[in-house]
Image 1 (cartoon, rainbow, N blue to C red):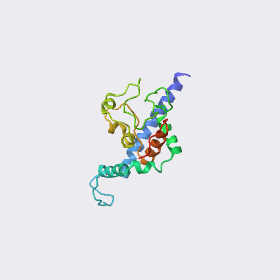
Image 2 (image 1 turned 120 degrees about the vertical axis):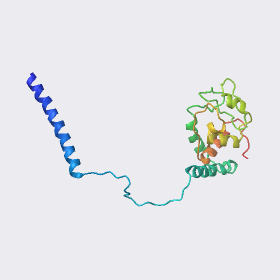
Image 3 (image 1 turned 90 degrees about the vertical axis):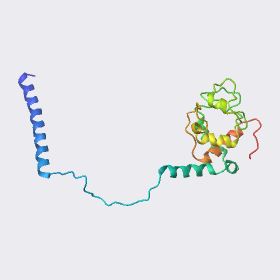
Image 4 (image 1 turned 60 degrees about the vertical axis):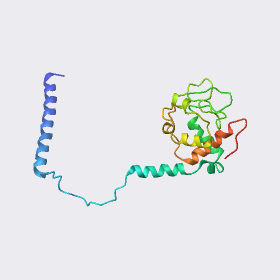
Length: 182
């Protein structure tokens, strides 16, 4: 390619840019767009002010209001096992199996918190104390980071109370001697 051909290509690009800019100026001159923000171009609809936090609080309170004890009687083992797939990435549930990222969940219901030997629990969970009752587990599974601030568990939680009941019923079965339902 000769220098003359390169000059023709560069001149074509330059002419195209100049034409584009001129068309823009002419278009703005013809249309005469005046942006006046004081002009209202829509109808105002007055709505009562409601806080989104209060609506969110109401829905979360309703989720927690339903007693887990009453839902366990109608819970489904099959659905609980399906829900456990979310947990299975970090937890084992079989008797004698090693802990993964999270502790083994065999015989979890009514077990002392932070009691699987050889697993390094967070300081927050170790100091929390108590047993994993149905009610405690329900609140923990709802929002783990809020229930025990400082826990290492990265799971966001199960918002649906029926899902939590199904999971807890299934976890209850993972024991040599499952505790009676409340």
